[in-house]
Image 1: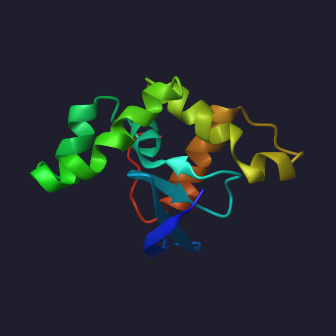
Image 2: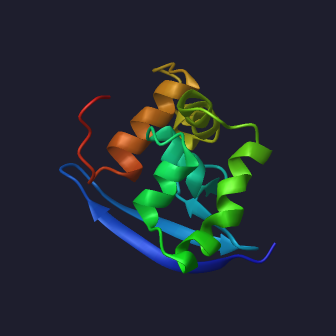
Amino acid sequence: KQWYQRRVAITAGHERKTKTNLLFNKGKIYLKFSSLTDNIPVVIIFKAMGLECDQAVVQLVGVEDNIITMFTASLAEPKQLGVYTQRQALEFIGKKSRMRKMDLKHKRTPVEEARELLANVILNHVPVVKF
């Protein structure tokens, strides 16, 4: 596969600074992060954050025609992977966590692991109200 890196986000929270990459491949957008074993479709990240409806995702990223066109392939991918709900998205992300495999002292479910990654590592700059 040929990956194209387009955006890099370096974020700083209270405890750490992280680097997150957005990658583009065959019209689909993925999140690449060092704590994950694989690139994660960006729409699965949105679903894990509670945006289960495609319309909510589109409204968040932009309703302009060029944005919708760019996002069309990405919106279809979670369905192809069997990810429809927030819980399924969290399980998908949690199973891809490197931290889960390394931390044998704290046994967490994939859902707990994904929540920890999203709230405190990957998106540590975004305030979380309900965790």
